[in-house]
Length: 215
Image 1 (cartoon, rainbow, N blue to C red):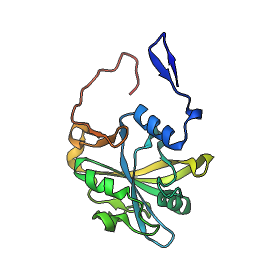
Image 2 (cartoon, rainbow, N blue to C red):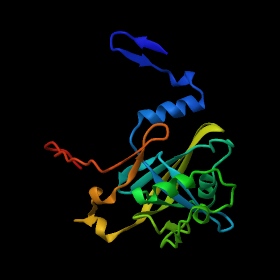
Image 3 (cartoon, rainbow, N blue to C red):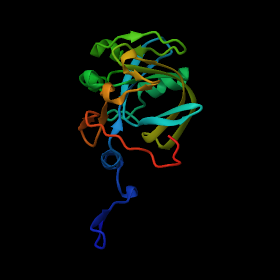
Image 4 (cartoon, helix red, strand yellow):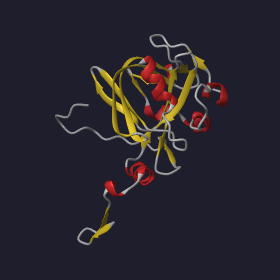
């Protein structure tokens, strides 16, 4: 690290960091990150659900979402989620509100392949309409998605698979909808910060868009 005296800042080159150092720094830089439960189904029909904070929206028509999936933190092998997604080309994203905080965290444990986190942590799988992957009953929002593209960057196990999916259908608790959109003040989702810290959407404020800006 070298200091920039003129700005009082510290410069860090990511090329100088190993995987753990890069992960720790990046996840403290890009905050807050929405966190979701991503559910998939394996070749033999077993269900999997895991938390991801490297995910988000990319576009509206078509409605696009992405997930960044790295290797298992401890065992350094491919996660069940990407193995299932490559096999079935489908997945479901479920929002995590404050009532799901503990179970979301438990889903992140390194269970052996084939073990259902639904059963281990006490979540309820529900049949989706358009994809084979299950929805999470306890989640206020479920998004059914099909894979459009999977791109791999880096050399395994220090690599990431970026999954781009098209949102086919969304299931939303009726009380959350207001004039065709979700009321963020009622949703109360949680988001990931750096290290083991999280935050909520309890403090919400509104800004009016400048003239000529598209939403």
